[in-house]
Length: 493
Image (tube, rainbow, N blue to C red; front, side):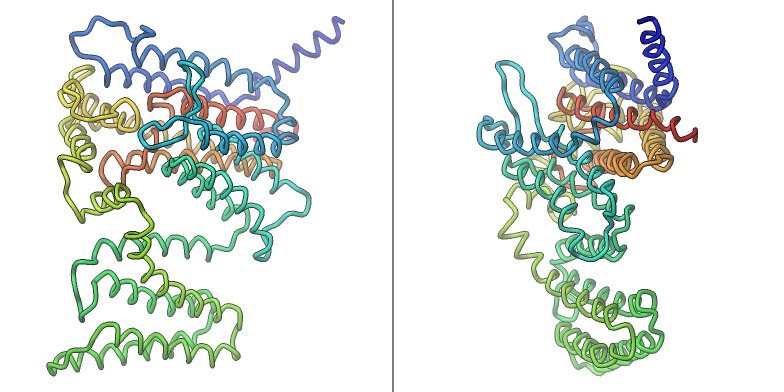
C-alpha cells in the first residue's frame, strides 16, 4: 500500500512539474483582471459595495472564477488518454445538447441558446468548441488519415459545420462564426493553401462589393469594377506562381494591357466604354485562351485557375442577393454601419459609437479606476459583457489596453509554442484549435468594440461577464495543459 501511495505521490509531483505554469499564471491574471473590469463597468465611483458581493456582477464573476479554478485543476488530474478515447462521444453528446437547446430554450433577445435550470442558465455553444476541437484532433490522429483529395475533406468539414448548423438553429450567429476559424487548423495539417486563398478572396469581394456599391465607374458599381480587376490580376498571378506557366502568364498579361490601353484610347476620344462590356469581353477571351493552352501545361492547375475566375464572378453577383434577401435586417444594418455605408448613431450604431468615445476619452493613461464617465453614466449598453474592452480603454487608457493585448499575445504565442512541441498529432491539432479560437474571439471582439467589424455578440475571452464563456475557455485551455503535461514522457522541449 505504501508503495502505491509513493507511486501516486511521485506521479502527482511529475504532473505538477510538467504543467505549463506560465500559461496558468497568464490565465489567472486575465480572469482576475476581467472580474475587476466587470466591477468597474457596473459600479459607481461612490459605491460602497464590495466587488466580492455575490449580489453584484463582479461578485458572481469571482464566484465563477473560483469554480473555474476547481474545474481547471480537476481536468489536470484526468488521464489525458481519456480525452482522446472519448473525443467522439463527447462531441456527439454536445451536438445532441445543441439540438435540444434550439427547441427547448426560451427566447432571450432573439436567441434560443440558453438552457435554464431554475435561476441557473448555461450556454452549450461555449462548451461545444472544446468538443469540436477534441473531435478534430481525434480524426487527424487516426492512423493513415491525411488531407489528400477532396473526399478527405468531407469528414473534417462536417465536424466543423455540424455544430455551426445547430447553433444557427438557436439564432446565435456570432457563436456559429467562431467555428469557421478552425479552417486555419486544416491548413496547418495539410489543406491546400488555395482553399485559404479562395476564402480570403470571398471575404474581400463581399466587403468591396457592398462598400463601393454606390459609386459608378465606366457605368458599373465601383465595387464590381474592383473585383473584376482583381480577378484579372489573380488570373495572372496564379498562372505565374501557382501554375508556373511563364508563357501563359506573359501572353494573358499582354492581352490585358492591350485591351486596357484600347479602352482608355476610346475613352480619350469621347467614346464611352461600358465596364461590363469591357470585362465580359476581356475575361472570357482570356479564359478561352487558357482552355486551349492548358493542354500544353499542367491541366489541373490551369483548369483550377479558370474555375476560380468563373466562381469569383458568380460570387460577385451573388453578394447583393445574399445581403438583401438572405441576411436579416438587423444583420444588414450592422454590416452597413461597420463598413461605414450608413451612420445610425442613435439606434443600431449607438453601442459602437459610444464605445469608441469611451476608449478615445481614456487617452494615454486613462481616467483612473472607477472614474470613467461614459461607463458610470451607462452610455454603453452591455458594457460588462461584449463591450468590456471599452471600460479598460476609458479607465486605463492606451497603457491598460496595450497591457491586456500583450497578455493575450503572450498567451496565444505560448499556446502555439505548446502546439509545436507536441509529439502526437492529437495534441498538436487540439492545441492549434485552441489558438485559432482564442485569436478569432480576440480579433472579432476588439474589432467590434472599435467599429472595425459588425457587432455579432462575441465575448472577450476571460474578461466578458458570464459563467458559460469563462468555463468554456477554462475547459478548452486546461485540457490542453493536461495533454501537454505528458511531453516529459517523450523528452523535454
